[in-house]
Each structure stands twice: as structure tokens, then as C-alpha cells.
Image (cartoon, rainbow, N blue to C red; front, side):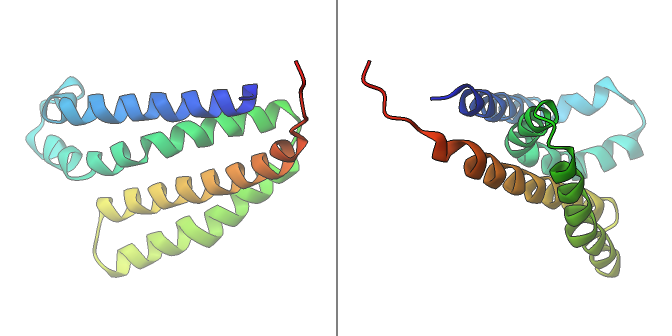
Length: 137
């Protein structure tokens, strides 16, 4: 397994570990930030969306960093613009029509991250996986 795949895999693993920890301590995490009942209720209504996205976010942010280091800024800009205006903004407007409130914003954010992650994974696979070489050692 190449270093890029290893790093992306570790991003996924760390995101999954954070998902498990967040799930285990779901009821207690909000109390670290606030004691306000309304704030805690809002937190508990949407925090699961953030947790679900963590494994994908781990991969997306790792690949994002790799592509920045490789100087792929034009590609990253295009992915950001395409997913922001093609996924996030329409979902925010749609969730507003559906009266989803804060939950709708987090759903839109989660879908945006998945879209970014998929684009980065596809670019990674196209750019690096065809380079497999036969090794005889």
C-alpha cells in the first residue's frame, strides 16, 4: 500500500474512532461547552449528523492536504466551487423550504463534505493508482 493510501486510510480510521467516541459520550459532550438547556437541546438534535460525517471528513481533509502539498490548487479551487454551489447552497435553500432549521444546514454541510471527499478520492485514484509498478523484490 502506498503512502497516500495509508494516510487516507488513517484519516478514515481516525474519523471512525472519533465517531465511536462521540457516539459513546453523546449525552456528555455538549456539557463541555455549555450548560444552557436550549443550547444543549440544539446540540443533541444535530450532533449525530456531524458524527456520521467524521470518517468521510477524515479522508477528505487528508487528501485535501496532500493535494495542497502537491500544488493542485486549481483542482481544489474547482472542487470547492463546484461542490459549494452545486451541493451545499442548493441543499441549504431546499432545507429552508422544508423548515429543517439548523438540522438542514448540517445535512447540507455533510453532503458537501461527502461530495468533496468523492471528488478528491476520484482524483487520487486517477492520479496515483494507475502508477502501480510490477515489483520483483
